[in-house]
Every structure is written in structure tokens, then in C-alpha cells.
Image 1 (cartoon, rainbow, N blue to C red):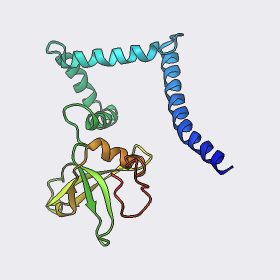
Image 2 (image 1 turned 120 degrees about the vertical axis):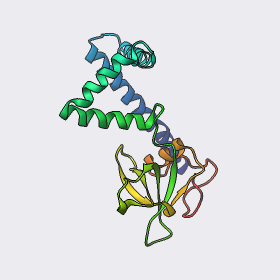
Image 3 (image 1 turned 180 degrees about the vertical axis):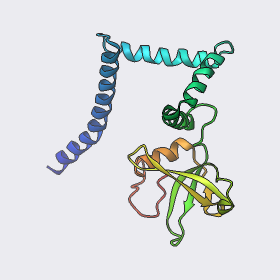
Image 4 (image 1 turned 45 degrees about the horizontal axis):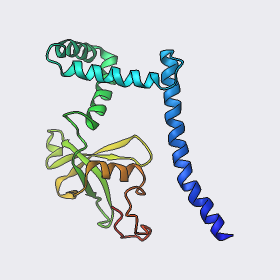
Length: 194
């Protein structure tokens, strides 16, 4: 009986993430197709990918780059639109493109308890105010969320990690459960789950 329960739980562990992932992608396909008014499932996604690729080509092409730059300048000058546009542009640019910000994963030691630290990414220097001297800007993503906090941290509390940005981001967003070694139990405190 115990073996049947174990098999059932193993099946759940495999099927639930698979089903949820497939369902999310199916909902995205259907919504994109509905938005574009296309009755054939998946064609809307293909057209969307083609359009984004075409805009990327135009943005990198010498002849059309100026036209797209004018659109960018126009959106940057509109008062309320500028706030949303520049925030989204900076957020997307932090993950992709030439100006990626999340390329320097770090461990930040918290004051008070030397046994506690958080993972984050150095995104740049702190503002040029005298109160911020000797500090760096560190973004701390939240687990199971697409939010995070920007904190200013003294340079001596920040330790660069010998891990890729993708590994660190996956570890943080998954709440520490992703990236575990297959052979280890990962349950003991102090064990290496990297």
C-alpha cells in the first residue's frame, strides 16, 4: 500500500507542473488568437513572434533605426506615458539586450546576524549623494513573484558569486527548491543546494 501511495505522489509531482505549464501556454495561445481574430490555434503566436522579430530587425537596421528612435523619443516626452513606458523598457532591458543589469549575482550579508544572507544582483552604483558613499545598488528578487526590492548595500557586505545569473535567479524565484543536486537530499541546513 505504501508503494502505491509513493507512486501516486511521484505521478502527481511529474504531472501537476506539466499540466499547469501546458495549460498556461494553451491559454496564451487562445488569448492571442482571439485578440487577433484568428480561428486557427497557434497562428496568432507565430504571427506575434514574427512581428517582434521584424521590429527587432528594423530596430537594428541602419535605415529604420532613426524612425524607431523617434517613436521612442515621442513616448519618453509624454508625461504620464513616459513613467510607464520607461519603467517597462528598463525592466525588459534588464533581462535582455546589450544593457542587461542582472549579470552580477551576489551574496549580501545582513547586519546583526552574520549567519544570514540574501541573494541578489548588483545593478549599478549607488546615487552620487554623500550619504551613499561606498555603497552599491543591489536588486533582491522575491520568490514565487516577479517583484523585488532595490537596496543600497555597503560594498564590504557584498560578495560576488561564482554562479550564472540564470542559476541564481531560478534559485531565488523558486524559493530555493530549483537547482538542487539530484543525488543530495537538500533537506539539511548548511548543505550545498547550488
